[in-house]
Length: 369
Ligand code: NAD
Ligand code: AHE
Ligand code: ZN
Image (cartoon, rainbow, N blue to C red; front, side, top):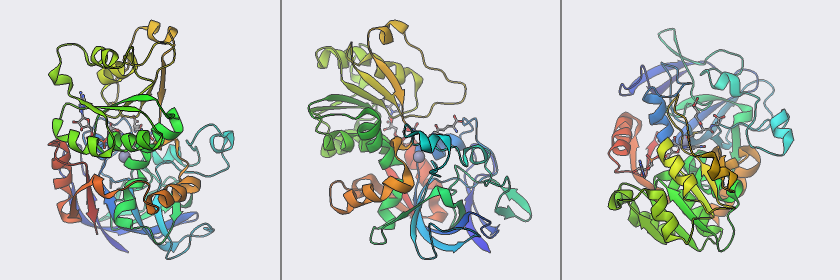
């Protein structure tokens, strides 16, 4: 069949809208019609050429929601017409990781996924016979996409796909990092570095966890109003201070925060986020994705004296088993997704979404097909 898709032909080039050939879903695969997709900073990161797993040409996009159009041989967990969210963190329920009970990372399709391939090592997208790579097992910047069954969460048909697409990455990631990875408790003090889609979702998670002080930090003050609306008790612009930001936060909090979250992908900020944690118990969670080759550094004494450095992928959430519960919370009104959607656009205008992100003017742009 044919599908309209935004193709990343090469790093740092605008995406090009193309009509592609899409092969049918094979064994264990599903054809999904994407209804809406958010644009996450990770899409821009890979397009920038800084992703060590970035392969071109590819169809980016990993924050989508859609409807099952067809299923391949042996698919039992979803059927035609089901509403689904594609998952870049699969959940097979059978691998060492899934059975460990310790992580949401699943190894079932991760190796081929990182090479832009379907689990059988081939691709489903072609342009005039040329293979086009998949992305993060999702490729939601296409009207139709083929996804592994283990990479699909079946969700409630009543949920608005135009909003819950954001639970395919950003909002689940930020909320989950706070609630699952850090397990922030009532009365805690937290610092959130970077107030984009991920950081704002972390604020929601901190508010829902009962944190008493939620400090939002960003170099772009236009992000502060939304941060405060969602629950930030303090907002700080590092550019307003002569001292290093970690010192500013330590002084504001009588020795440091209980938890900090790095939602930017900047290794210097990761250091600051660790070092603003309270001696003896403060934990810093890395969420941001840093460029290939970048490394984090701090004095080991920071860890010897009780600070903890951790990371979080997709908020520690197991997508197939846990996303419906998060969607129920959203439908119950426990948190809103509309606040995140600052811009909507058709696929033809998808490059505008990247421009708005780089200009610091958007939280999330959502593309509708
Ligand atoms: P975004 O571009 O919407 O937001 C980033 C924010 O950081 C912006 O508001 C920007 O002004 C701010 N910022 C930039 N430099 C700063 C600095 N030095 N100090 C303070 N603030 C600064 O991005 P996003 O979509 O929210 O994604 C954030 C990061 O999270 C990215 O690195 C993305 O790749 C990563 N991410 C990780 C996961 C995961 O599972 N670990 C999931 C989604 C996104
Ligand atoms: N390909 C990158 C790694 C990128 C990365 O860390 N991705 C996050 C999700 S970002 C979503 O917006 C993640 O979940 N990582 C765990 C995983 O299994 O990829 C690189 O550096 O090679
Ligand atoms: Zn993302």
